[in-house]
Image 1: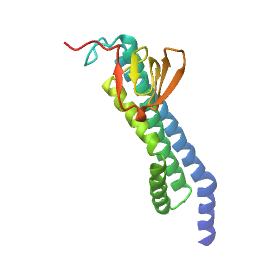
Image 2: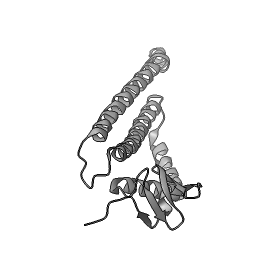
Image 3: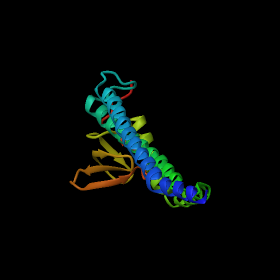
Length: 186
C-alpha cells in the first residue's frame, strides 16, 4: 500500500500537477485574450459613438478618453486574471495558501501606505477623465503652469507652456485648474 501511495504521489507530482498547471495557464491566456478583445470592442464602440452624455467636446477627445479608460480596464482585468492564476498554481503545487494570504494582506497594507501618492495621482486622474475637466489640445492654467495639454494619463498630465517648456504635472497635485478651451456657460 505504501508503494502504491508513493507511486500515486510521484505520478501526481510529475504528471498530474504539471498537466493541471498547463491547463490553468492556457485558461488564463484564453481569458486574457477574450477579456482584452471584449474591452477593446466596448471601448471602440464608445470611441466611435456619435453621442456621449454631457457637453460635446469633439470626437478626438472622446477617443482619447475611451482609449485611456480601456487601458485601465485591460490592466485591471489582466492583474485579476494573473493573481487568480498564480494562486491556483501555488495551490496545485501544494502550498498552504492561508499564511500566504495573511502575508499578502500585511504586505498590501505596507505597500498601500508607501504608495499613497501614486494612488492619489491615479484616483485624481480617473476622476479628471470621468469629469472631462480637460483634454489633449486644451489651453489650461494651473497654479504652477499655463499652456496646452499634450497628453493626459492616469498619473501624469503633460503641458507645453507658452515658452516651449514641457511640464509634467502629477494629477493628484493639481488642485485648481482653469480650462480656457471649454465653451462658456449660458
